Amino acid sequence: MKNIEELEKYLEEECYSFAGLTIGKHSAPEGYIIEANGSEYNFSYSERGRKTVLKSFCCEKDLVEYAFEKLSADKWNKAHLVAWVWSKDEIKQAEQELKKKDIMFERNDIPNYSQGKDAYRIFVFGRDIEKLVDFKKKYFRRK
Image (cartoon, rainbow, N blue to C red):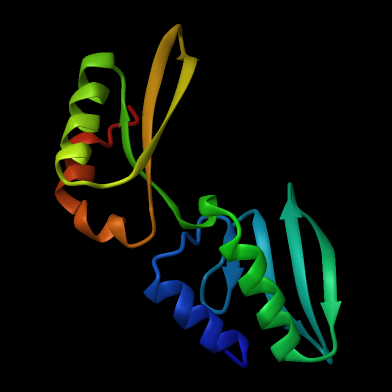
């Protein structure tokens, strides 16, 4: 990959999450930012409205290589939230469905999320999100 547009296309094809990544047409409220800024190419991080340039490059290809390496190294850049339920029985049922489909997942519970209620969540990674449209409709209920 030589430029930001090619990296963006690759990330889309491989189903990276853009919830915490700003690149090209994707804009996240917080997270990594991959951008050209005048004659510089920056890999930055934004949190609570404050942007910090982590690394700057004079060549777009160098930025793309660095960003690809950084994003590829952390599975959470490909994480997609597919289940959010309020009961242990439901989350166990969701886990069983994913196991039957042979889909790798990670469960992440939030104790005492709302008025003493626990929230139960499941994340999947990368292209597996494409297999779970109906699953997500069934198990994603934040309220």
